[in-house]
Image (cartoon, rainbow, N blue to C red; front, side, top):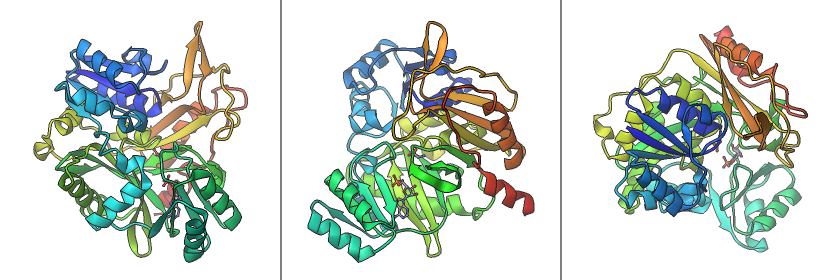
Length: 415
Ligand code: AMP
Ligand code: GLY
């Protein structure tokens, strides 16, 4: 099978890593990729948002499967252009990707599907915004309606800050605050059937102890020793299946990865957000644990054949990912700096996010630079593996969280 993967982050590096290890894959192509992915695949320098460039490439390569990693190309309709050529695509249509592209659309789908989420109002002017803020009270939750790379949400006790963010965004969703731990569960769907993957937890705030602003994600771990045993089954039943049915009933079937960001509240599971693609950095912990060959699985989804897919197989190992970020991330990342100390370790994998190679020298090229996944028999061992691989890496001004999976690993030891 010839596979073309679109994207260039650590998520795509993890996807490439798993696709490459599927014996069914004869050729792996990635556009545009990054220096880490370049060690696994043939790279093609095209604009991933350009639907005709991506479909021309897929056709020229006679790709059997196109996998679209990031939300940008999905929301821009790249999967529609490739699908129109008759090439199987793992990634939803432009219409179905609105489940991530518009928070208010996602709320409407959940309301029709009977999926529980925070109560909310969509507001477009100051008067509506003020009324919604006062209706829910503190802590205030204000979300930009459109795509904002994980940074469009403000959660604050400060009404002034909440209102300022709302006014800056224009159209916003203002909603009830959901209490309780957050987890991510991914559903792989062929438009009709959906298979839940094991849960992961990510760390969105930039600093230890969940301090500082939200980021695209500073780390993750899986499995979650503290989560109820039936969490995947419950999420399939209460969230994934009704959502996939609702999308199909509207004539916009969702083929690809439905990411459910969930709050485990005292009243039950509530959806915080949907995304239309694999999450980052959760993918960097999940895929190294997935034993089911990935290309076959994504091909079955892309061709409507998930009903005959056997249950997913998972490794008993734990995985912990720690993200190395540039100085100033997330507000004003400093890029173009030399990176060194990327030694190979047996129990960890270094995934590239924002890196570039210039005259042989690896340099930082984005806010999140590397995602280091440690593997081990439990979370403590996996943490130790991740941190011992990240410590020798040198990048001036860089920072990473020291507490990824710390609480969960202590709880697991005490259990
Ligand atoms: P989102 O982009 O929707 O995932 O929001 C980013 C982060 O904001 C989430 O991971 C939560 O930590 C927080 N958040 C979003 N919505 C809520 C909510 N209704 N209640 C509490 N926290 C929220
Ligand atoms: N881990 C958060 C995201 O992928 O949006």
